Image (cartoon, rainbow, N blue to C red):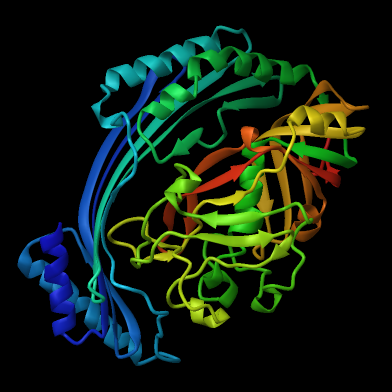
Length: 485
């Protein structure tokens, strides 16, 4: 990998690039799924290639290839410089990068059990056990399970003299039970919707999730939902479980703080942002108890946004986003940091693969825990709804007005969790909603969730992000907005 990268770097500089960086990636994926007692998919792929990004004439150029011969690598690097010079003909101003130091390092994310060492038959056997448990209960009409493994090996070099090797293994697993009755469809997912739980670790994650043990409960809940009362409409207090809160963070905090969206240089697959630069340090984003960080460092946990260096060779950082309710930080790159008078990038540039340019992407955008338990929150709630596991979401292209639906809820009356509710939903305005947060559970209830399917850019890049959260309560929220009875 190093030889390919050095070839490309040398050629780019020889052709006149004033800055150059090369990423060589070897990505392996295995995806397995089952449906109603049958194997549905067994898919494996591997991709090896390099991407060259340069500045020449004050403008960016990028080119990529998966034909790693010396001649073709040289042609690709020369093409990147040629594209940069063409781009310079229509530039508004020269590209200026925040300073960064030379880095020479090697890092491999912890992986106790290599998922690619586990026989496919063993994975399918486990998923079919889950399937059988789900369909054991009459009323479950569709059972689906999946496992998804990635091994991402990357070598980065730049004209600063940086040489960085990183190796990550990512594992995901989960399942969903669906029940059709009359003209109604209900579903329950475990441990989260949209693929389950994903983290930067090995097959040990699958064992930690206790997939088979939780299947009977999930089956019972999805069937019971048909007999439940509809979520009422009105203004009520709500308590969100940590997985739903993770998606709330993703949509109403994570995307708005991407500085390229704020500056208008990126708007595809999520729009722009209401968090314009004059709000930095001045906007009361949330209540005083809310503290949010964007933390890519391994110390934060095995999130999908965990690394040691981003795709510009900038070290991973913990960036404060909301402190005591105040908006204090963006996700930035070397190019965008000067726009807000920051001396360096926050280290948030990432690319889906070797054939895509890096973009500002969420790392692990997490709500820091408070104190107490979910039972404490319920006991202190007179009229509310506990909502769990996302089912749907909608948010405008400035990330300001939203509504979310969840798979299941429970009514809270007089400090006690009472009847189950179907089709729970809520909506609001981002800053009003976060300012209504008056309680966050303690660190023992905090989970770092993985979102593997965040889309951005054109052509679209699908990346993984992490979101840590404990259950939290929000006062006087409009509920019953997405699925009227």
